[in-house]
Image (tube, rainbow, N blue to C red; front, side, top):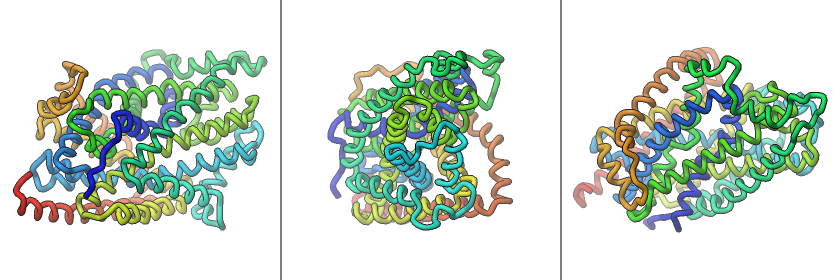
Length: 513
């Protein structure tokens, strides 16, 4: 089987950066920052330094180590790191997490496509009242009733099909296709974001009758501490949200980096690549996402204009653009920006599973891609059908996009730091690197990162699991969604078992690797 590889160091950096930069940078982060004010930034940057970066370095190191031994998926790489028969089965989480997230993520991506088209054609120029955009969003996504988007050839379904075709065009060509979309997408994303940012920062005070609604105060809503001052640092939920945002924003624990970095050669500087990709993501999140959305919504709609994630992106900001000169153009650019951010992330999510099918079951690219197309399309249609109150989407996001990610990341750092060994991780990371390893890094990998991750996970479960358990007991859509995910998890577990049997047969003939 032909071994894939990145064409250049820039290619892998852009790919990992593209995987990390997504809708969370431009929607989720601004929502948290506006909710907590400047107090949010302290735990946010502490989490970046002591949790995000050490785990990212660890993933790059163990991935390259596994890739050098012929494995490019989580089950195979964990089997190399930990000679235990259970190790590959923990790696199943590295498949179900990105596949599960893809099922609903590409649906949100399709919303961005239609909104961009709507602003371009004028169909989404609905005036300055946010309620008009809220009603359109509800009708378009089918929030008010299950199955409503399947009434005829709805715009939502057409947009979803378009996104699937666009995604799988690049996914089919593997690493080369993913690299191609990011070489074009990331520069275009940054250029579009800078254009919109300049417009937002030059808004001044649009309404003289409301002088307090100016750009400076809008920036203050992002950076200033709340009225209660730094006492807000005692808010445990804020710390959990900050840690979670860093965790998900950097794509650590997704199973994507462990696949991407497995194609990197020994001579490549993985510390430089990891640091550059993480820094690029933080720039997009803080300097672009935060500075665009929060001040824009504040200037025209006041503090109440910065609401929920979807409310901010698909309700408040369209109303904001209606207030602006050339607002239709900037509305179009905003949703093009969201689409590019989404597609550079979504094309990365199926590569781990495709790599597993190729190396574990010896399926060719065509069969692997076709199988995942059928599985994920079924999942996306399931989420789109059970659209009432976005119940299926929220449930899938909780289990695939949050719960499983924490388990996978915790397993990774424990295996890397305690079983494979922190010293071996650092030795692998240092090979080919011109960057000096921070002295605190060994302590972070072995003690601090696992402790922080476990603490946040325990408190998060204590707060969120009872709510989800109640939904499972009382809501049939939640029950169906959990069963769907469990079915997919069982399916990948069975495939992993077949792969293990195949690998054992190969080991029996050729000797242990």
